[in-house]
Image (cartoon, rainbow, N blue to C red; front, side, top):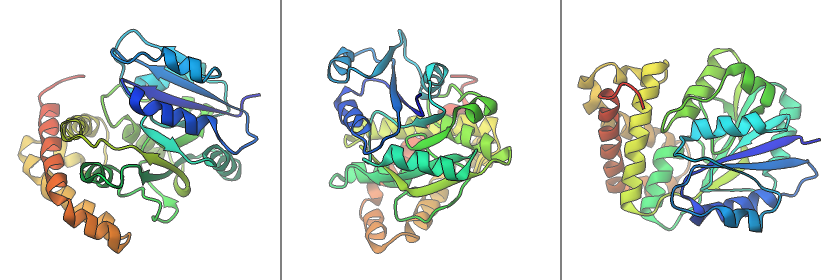
Length: 293
């Protein structure tokens, strides 16, 4: 009987997904698990994956699909009692599955998010992306109850997920909406730093800025749907100039709670962070001007 299903959405990430799947299939665990990749690539040939990973369940979609919808498709065919999400640009720790299953056995019906390590520590653009996206989920943070967690390291009972409802079909931030729904229903959302993955951040400036723009767009869309921290920013275009100072302050606040290394790194690479925030604002602005994705 399958205990856990790992679901990985993918879109033109052949350069990283081999590392991801190597880590997922080489776990130190006795847990019976399956791995499902839901791919909507229009460039990369993913048939090579099945050759290297014969136990992989590869679902090929005919058109571009956002991560939330891809994950929903994976959930529908998943056989595991537990669902674990990661992304095709992530490398999971060798004890990832063992720790996930143990925590769920101990805590019951909860949503669990783990820590995200920096997978590109020698690249300034990669560090900037890491700090902007994951500074609240670095391994140095303490275990705690939270409101939202990223789906790159996210696990839940399948029955509870189906009870909460599907992830929304938005280009980015469907994880914020889902975990916020869990939180608002009074279900505990835990951050457990011992459950770790490494995120292979974008190291190309153009790709980094495009991703930040998409994040800004998704952030605006989900804040129109749900009451999240910073939702007031999505109520009026006049609040847009506040995004850069607010996100700068919140980023430094999160980093100040870690260690001197991250404080100095954030100061050093702030020009790249600022460029990312500007691109994020562009996406947020675009989110105001579209009714739907």
